[in-house]
Image (cartoon, rainbow, N blue to C red; front, side, top):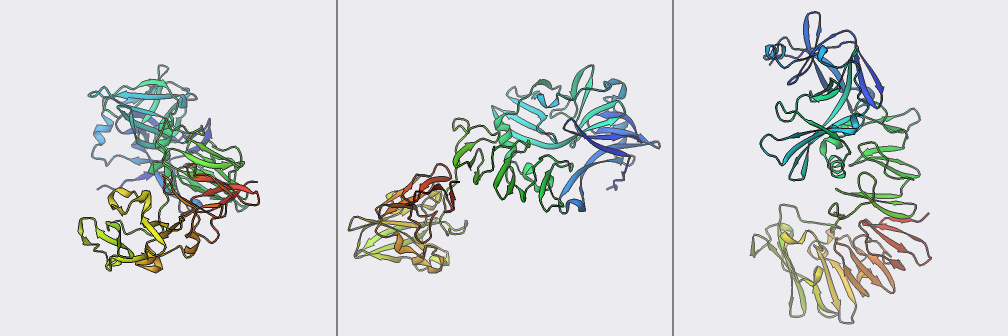
Length: 489
């Protein structure tokens, strides 16, 4: 393999009109090869523009995109690049083109073999272009690429890091390196769709921390910069991190920004939860549920996917077991089976002593898992209530417990189990929450496995990932699914 020779040309980097601009002054623009990209000439040698991630000590472990030119004289396809009949020369490119409206258009290609398949390419933010594949109204992100405005004097065009070039000729925009070879995209008005924004927000490339520059300032605060090292968010924070969003935290709370650098909240928020299609947060004591563009979340647009509460211990993903409760004489017994063959005990050593005596029937009338089931099939539970036993006492009250304290006591996280006896009610809800009441107060089993957890005078069901409460002293607030409280200001 030939070693690539990178040449450092005189490239001035400026930032204008929201676009990263590179001005090349010591090399002569030659042509655009639609298949390979931008070719320049210096000292009788041809070079091709190349973008790559450069390690920079200024940004510590993070990387930034920089432009370089590579000597192509040793390329095996050198002749193909130089002698192509499809080259686009300086004379074919409009001088001083207008790219100020670029974010308002998209390039749409239609498959030559499938009328239901399309590709949309457009500017997503001030630093990135995206390309989506559409088929039967289903979309998939094809690329998420940085872009720059290249200037060779009065020759100017947009360059994407995958080698695509957008240039203006006869007052019309054109794009090279299309999805389908020799495709001629149609230009349509652009408005980023919520499904596109959501797809990017959940994409691994967009969430890659190496393309988000978080820089420490002299005041020991942090500021966010785009992949070119340019400040994209004005405000500075005590900490900034990436999780489907750009999240800034200071002593007052959190701010949330999407990957188009749009702020989603008006004032600092107390708490939030992020999901595939929506974000919930507490702002000014109110619970809000929004999309990735900041608009109110509508369940008709997307399926809701709030957090399932999971038990404190789950068997290894490779271990598939079924559970069954049987009453034998005066005892309630727990049987653990291997899911592959229900007639055998579980192969995992943790359960080798099955069956286990869990309670005698002295005070207990009946015992069951969630939804009044006396058996649980691992393959169909989706973890709902897995490992949790509920029982009805002969005095009419209820109780709840963790099976693992009988199987292996050190796995039990509910040390205060007496709290969960003689309950007024047990209400198992759809996302795994188990609401309980005792002596006129209320709580949640999973979210509040702490002493005195049944302490709320009023407690709503979870609205997604938060439940509204009122304490006996009248203080109101919100409770999350880990038992954290957020009191009203």
